[in-house]
Length: 321
Image 1: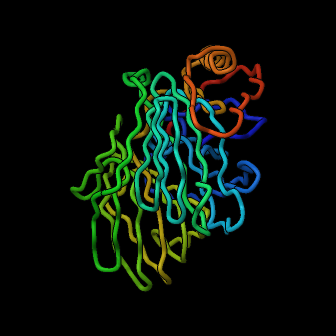
Image 2: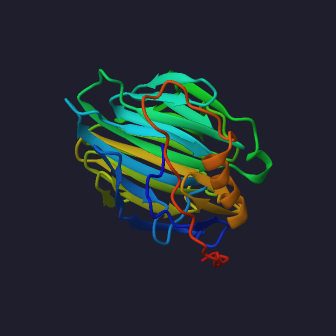
């Protein structure tokens, strides 16, 4: 999915400047962003004061939206570099096309994982005949230096492993949890899991104390380590936890995101992740005037035009606290 913000700001992310080396409970408030004509998203990452969680660098939550009689999601062809996109649905369908020739319909609890590597472009849209509701999350994972120029590729996994406990089912999206491992290709120590809780459930998820974590609430009423987390909000949890208490008053859906703190400083702008302003500038030129990012065939419409890149000098980030 694209960042459609026409005033996209350059951000320095990664490093250990904002990593909290102990358990915390930091509730993140989303920023509302219009995505096309009929879809509004709640942007949780990057957030003021919290840029990444492990390698997770971008998190949008959208819906549930009633799109009966509406076009639904319509994101024209756009480029990506230096990252992976993770498409995750609770309701609805998204049709993915990319410059490799991939054409897949992603449905609820199926993993759509696109690794941009050095360069790729894609579009996302609700099929012409689609379900009434659209509800999901779109996430980006930053690629480390050793893998950020890999050949682009797309994976679609319809069967994913689960971890279960009384009143809890966790579906592995990326990485591993409690002995289960997602088939999606990961390039850093990471975890992404979709957690379903039944009304009245109380459970504890096992965690890796070396990872930093956050939990995104998708639906229902749940408490994460005693903190009520409303749908569309995210609780940052820091590092140093070996388990995470969860409780649900109603049926609830959560997403657990975590990983080793991302060591490298990255530069993120629009739909690109690089290492310098000059590299981002070169990528923008590549999208606007060359064939670097390829062509998405079959989409009925024009591709996105990149916004102007601000000439802002980027500053190093702070220290671990």
